[in-house]
Length: 187
Image (cartoon, rainbow, N blue to C red; front, top):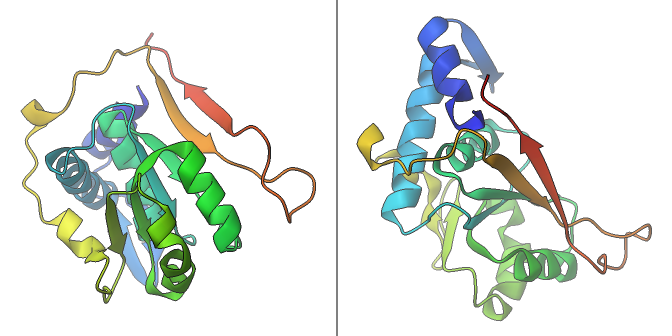
């Protein structure tokens, strides 16, 4: 059901404002279209249901798109706290099994410090002006969406996101990564 939430809302209220970011308003139809393109791109790049997609992003348009695209294709969203330093980012990315990392240029120096120790992360994207190791996020919004290409998700499957949280002390990673599941059941 989480995979259909945005599409259903877009069908009912396509022209209603869904998000306002940096003085720009996005309708539900806009968000649905952008999310569909991102979902299609992730599928075309080999991301499958159950794969982890990490994002190190502040509150922005891209973080909303990442969540909904993961829900749409059955991938597991791995949101990372923008306050995490390289050591904790490395821990979270390694233990989550993320295959993709999406971030922004302002945070890329932290990623650059640990990139060589992240063999599981196969693809890197930045929201603007890319470096030699990352592609521009805008490429992910250029795919043609065909709903026939979407994986068939069980309506009772859990939409999941992974939370690798630090223990009580913010200087050390937690011993066990925690997985949070949001279960949406069909009626």
